[in-house]
Length: 103
Image (cartoon, rainbow, N blue to C red; front, side, top):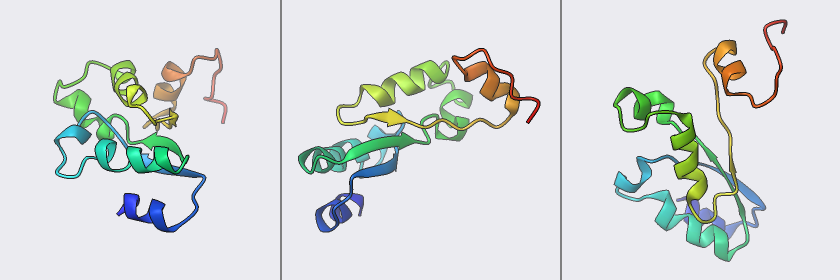
């Protein structure tokens, strides 16, 4: 579906769910979407990188750095967005020395 849409519309960038479980999907985005996006020079932003925590809970990955590392190692993925369930998680993941608890 996404690959077909890339062929029909002039996207500049797409937001797509990518994670380490993708390779086990019947139609993995890495092999179906990334080649088309690359050929059409469309930027790719990955989301749902830790698969809602399922990759951590199952023991498949030991941390966010591995989830992000895998996703960002895919040729054609330009960046990723990460969500946090709590402010504490966000502060822990932030590379900047900021405190967000006052928000």
